[in-house]
Length: 193
Image (cartoon, rainbow, N blue to C red; front, side, top):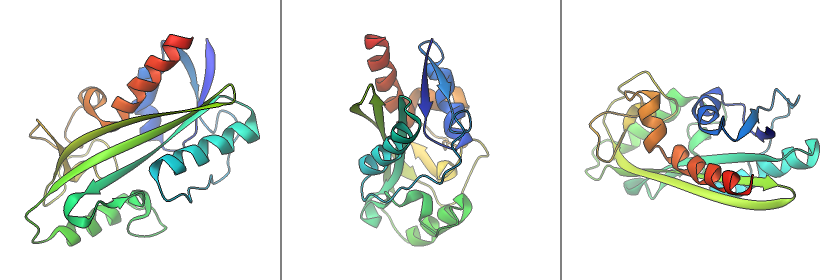
């Protein structure tokens, strides 16, 4: 089985992606390869950040790898927080602070339409590939649920009546933005395996 690195320290992302990849590749984490660096994310797009992280690992550790960047885009906030989703309320990267900032900015807003978008950058044998996934939904007025992470407690995906934080991980893995991008990645990796 071939090895591939997922360039993230986010255990929640690893828990979501590992089951989806298990039949095609052995998934390595940054800790598996001894990477303790704080990988930069200084691009102004999701695609740019994903590529920056993947290139860092590929160039330093010489391993095929992929990385993702995800943003929550809220229509009435001019698609904020977007690329700044992880640090929206500050450099401390606090999910609860980020959620609270969004809720404060959404007070009194009628349009609550939003979407999550994930971009995956894959570096495989020196070539770069991109895969995208999105899910549309709405922002609710207060957090509900304990599953998931980030903005999951305030986002209800289209066609559902529960937040991502209320849905079982198996359900979320069939409909989420990340799952959709990962499925495209897996199809690609399976076709060339």
